[in-house]
Length: 176
Image (cartoon, rainbow, N blue to C red; front, side, top):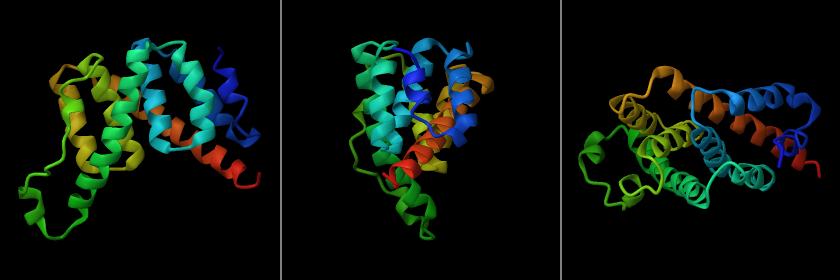
């Protein structure tokens, strides 16, 4: 399947998102699995059903079933963590930060894909949720594993583009 299935679903005014998505998915800073898994994880993170429905079958042509499952896992995990840690970051009472979260996060340590891939996807999903605490944790983990700033930034560009596509598709869906 071609990425055109996804980009053709965008309204005419989303020309930048169309151009950016194509360029980012062809860019070689990230592996094919990293790029497509990041895009798919971000689509799940936006919760925009029409975007997910268009992107998932195209991404599945580039990802194993295991990688698709890992992208879903990263999105779900970050949906939980960005709420919890994002809220802690906003609270004036810092006593909560010293307390254990008591939330299971097994997916962070038992990923079915390369740890760097999963961390890139979690980082990108954190960007969509705008959680500073999660962004910083995943960015530090990526750098600890030798991932360059350029590669981290590539995942961030994918997140920004997917989020903008979700917004455009939601705006059009509001009039349907």
